[in-house]
Length: 429
Ligand code: NAD
Ligand code: SF4
Image (cartoon, rainbow, N blue to C red; front, side, top):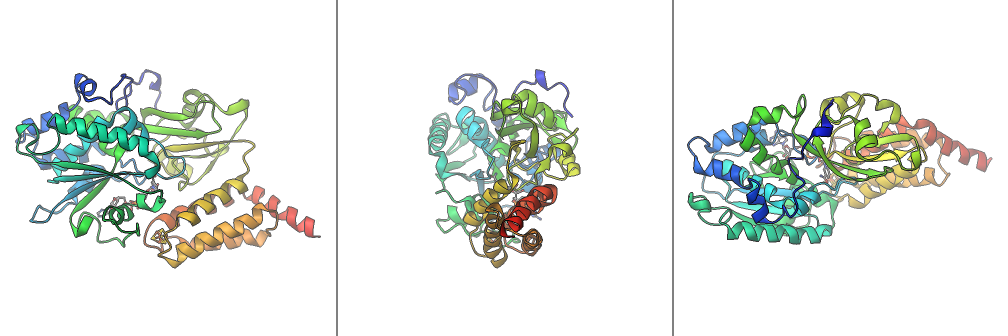
């Protein structure tokens, strides 16, 4: 649990006016990590950079929490094939809106991190994939990329150090599934965003069949911090096993929703009541979705002493996900909430796998029945049974992401669901 958070100075998005402009970024030590690496490629060999990032244990901020440096190390030795870094800025998980702040307020820290990652993996082409709804932020990033090309940080012979790296910005058209890493690769190739079976993992067979690493935007923004300050320093920030700064996206029934940067391991209580100004109207907290809707909801009584890091959230019965916290007050209708979540996943299923295509449809339909007061108690068991038929049986994690909220919300708020069912039985009688 982080005690001294009030004195924390943001590292990813410091409070510096116009930091999105390259002059301001450079005045504030911007691109110094890239210079450090490229100016001394003997000390900072590609392997050394990867090892430092691996030792820092930057947990992937896109939701899965995978060690970024370890992921880089999965890239095969260079051969005659092209190699790619695909940066995932599709953030479409409901409750998740934090990468947007990097694009808006500090795009160069991300570009710098992506360049260091590309160097470490011998990649010469970077793609950035942004959700289509973020078109204004696409333009901000494009402007930053243009500035980086003009200053010699991108393109041929970067900083005169014999390294060539290009970066292309592209955007989606509103499909959640294009944020799934292999769906994103298909979309980048100009095809429908159908996720691919893994293995082979993208490191072996990614874009156009070539070695590719996919990293989230916030994950890459952490890289310059590690290079400038070292893995040990990075490890000293945050919680045991979950380090570094985190962009907490806090939404729902709080007085001050927004994106807030603090170390990993902040207490849920501090984030809700101090950082986000407490619950609207002085109401009581009922529940929290900690990291985007695919992470299991927690009741208020399960949150005592819980902090926002993977260990604490696992022990409490959930996951860190994207740290997109959805706060719900005492008036929240959990049946309505769950139906809305299920509607989302049904709408976004790509339809390739039967358990997902049919399962998400059944979940939504049965929940609508319960929401409308026409459900029976046995429908709750039917829903739980459908979730077990979906989990772990599909190409990508969307089916799991659809199944988990149903299972955990029903199990953790069973009385509420039963009460809604009972009402219909009485009404019929
Ligand atoms: P995952 O745990 O399967 O994989 C994590 C990463 O590690 C992937 O890049 C994968 O390719 C790589 N990897 C894992 N094992 C590997 C191996 N043996 N060899 C090589 N590479 C390996 O998770 P995922 O399917 O990538 O992501 C699911 C997560 O995404 C969920 O936890 C969810 O929270 C999150 N999510 C986020 C958003 C968002 O908007 N940011 C949207 C939907 C889902
Ligand atoms: Fe498509 Fe769902 Fe299968 Fe993922 S699990 S590939 S979204 S049908």
